[in-house]
Image 1 (cartoon, rainbow, N blue to C red):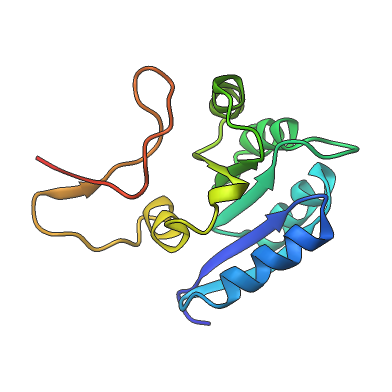
Image 2: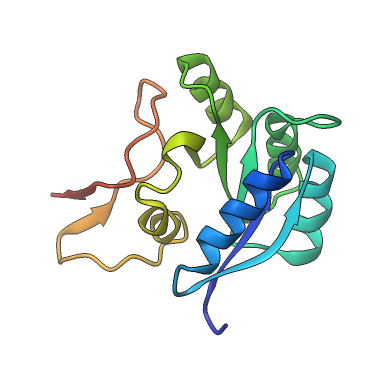
Length: 152
């Protein structure tokens, strides 16, 4: 797929990995380039496949998603990292931010705005003049909603 958003999915649950891969495959302009079951898979696949976005679970055996995120950042990976979890606590959001994640998503709400989120993360969103995508975290460390576009 030419100019597709290339996504790597990493989660220890094979069922969730397959669900997410199927969900992403149904989005026009998105290509799942690989999947992995732990943080070591994420590191190896990210280096080999050079995805635009790594979607990674926080809690996994062997090497968790936060440590894998830190290692990807230290390796100067240009991939955007979207950390996923089942837990909606401020401590998880703060830990994801501190590890170097570009975005945070609850697995229970992963379908809400996923296509838009991927476009915003990769800078491939079109917006009206004077508007720009809202990205990253606010000054309090809370992730910003990727459903918003800030117009100034």
